[in-house]
Every structure is written in structure tokens, then in C-alpha cells.
Amino acid sequence: MSRARRALLVVGDVVTDVVARHRTPLAPATDTAAEIRTLPGGAGANAACWAARSGGGEVRLLGRVGTDAADWHERALRAAGVRPLLVRDPEAATATVIALVDASAERTFLTDSGAALRLSPADWSPELLDGVARLHLSGYLFFADRSRGTARRALRDAGEAGVPVSVDPASAGFLGELGADRFLAAAEGAEVLLPNADEARTLTGRAAPERAAAELSRRFPLVVVTLGAAGALVAEGGAVTARVAAPPVRPVDSTGAGDAFTGAFLAARLAGADPAEAAEAGCGAGAEAGCGAGAEAVAVVGGRPAAPPVGDS
Image 1 (cartoon, one colour):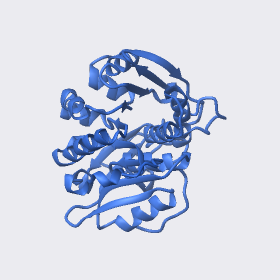
Image 2 (tube, helix red, strand yellow):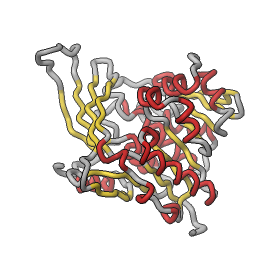
Image 3 (cartoon, helix red, strand yellow):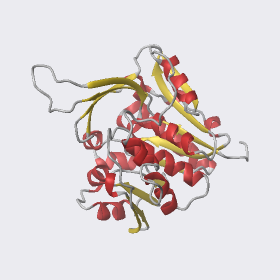
């Protein structure tokens, strides 16, 4: 394996997002006016794009997509500065998410995981870690047997290679279905856990994010809990060690805000930032309002940084 390590490797989901922004409550059994866009997304892919936007090294993405939209997603990733390592699935369509975004910018997802959770151990190779300084795993991988096996193999190989691993738990709803104990056991060996407040609560049963963060940091060396507009908490060794504020911003769409935080956080860590500094990069604390990754993400539609058009799917 190469001794020159600068790259971030993200293993996770690539998704076609259909984002529907509705200003009035949904009207059952009839029409509700909405602004609808089809955009490239996915927690893993979004985080990779935000990491590339933040700079500091090469960003690679391993994911599984259907042949239906593979070319479109590859073009989008390259346009965002990410090196795509996409496995084309001849049997399953690309994962699709319908994001219903209300007037407060809160989003509700309808998720068809498609090819994303069919990422198999055969799609993984220890050679993918060549030149990699950090490995990040999207938590969605942990919600199906096949992709969970892939995540576990990547964790093992990264540990043997001395590459630190981060995990984003991804979905409080899916965590609840899988079970906290099963997820925590599968993520064992990760250096960093990056849940939001709901996910931290689901994993610990602790209502207060501070208590949840502290408890999780007894199991993982570094835990960063995102709190939306309230910023983030950093916990190590069973205690909260830093609280980071988020700059004020008028939200448009909260889709991908956590992914933006993750990408900027990991890019900062890759560049040598300490945990609190990396959390500040994720939130944009201390920056001009709206300039941080998390703040910027909620000010645009979809889960990616603004990018030039990449053509039709």
C-alpha cells in the first residue's frame, strides 16, 4: 500500500432525489401545489461532494447504482470534484428518494434503496484503501445484510491498514427498525460516530443530546452530534468537550444538511484540524452567515453544493 495518504474514501449510497417543496400542508386525496426537482443525492454521495467542495485532498466514492442513471450520477460526481468508483447493478434500479419539504424547510423522506444496499463484499477490495487517509461509511449500508457485510469488511481492512474510519448513522427511522444494539455492534471499530440528535437519542435512549453524546463517546473515541440550527456537540471519553454554534441562515431545504456537515468535518480532519475546529468547519461557526457547509446546505434545494448542470438522466 502507498505510504502517501491524502485521499478520503467514502463508501455509501448514490441516490436520485425527487425533491418536492410544498408551501401548504399536504391535501389528502387531491392536489397540493409544489416545486419539484430531480437531483443527484444520497447521504454518502452528498458527503463526498461537500468534502470535495471543502478541499484538502482527493475524494473518492464507492457505491452501487442501477444502469438506468449511472452515467448521469458519474457526471454529477465528477462535476463536483469527486472520483466516482461506481458499481453498475444490472438487476436493480438506482436508489430513489422522494423528499417532501414543507414551508419550514423540514423534510420527510420516502425511500426506495434500490441498488444502493446491494453493495456486496465482492465490490470491496483492500486495494481501494491505497493512498487513503480516512474512510467514511454511510450508515445506510448497515440497514441490509449484504451491504452491512461490506461495511464490516471495509472497517476490518481499514483497521488493519491503520486508516481511521467514521460512520454516519444516517436514519433514526431505520435505526429503530434495525435495533440500536445491532447497529452499534456492526459499527464497532470506527473512530468517529457522526449522528444527529434524533439518531443519538435512538442509539442511547437518552433524551438530552449532551447525555447521548457522552454515552456514545464511551464506545467510540470521538462522537459529534449535530443539532441543526443549534450547532453541534463534540464528545470524547465519556464527556462533552466542545459546543459549536451554527451561523444564522434562512432555511430553504434541510435535505442533506447533515451530509454537508459530515463532508466539511472530514475534509477539515484530513487537513489536520482538531475535532472542535472540524465541527466549526462543518457548521460554519465563526464564518459569515451562510458560508459554512451546513448553513449553505439548508439555503439551497437538494443535498449537494451548487454545481453546473450535468445533463438529463
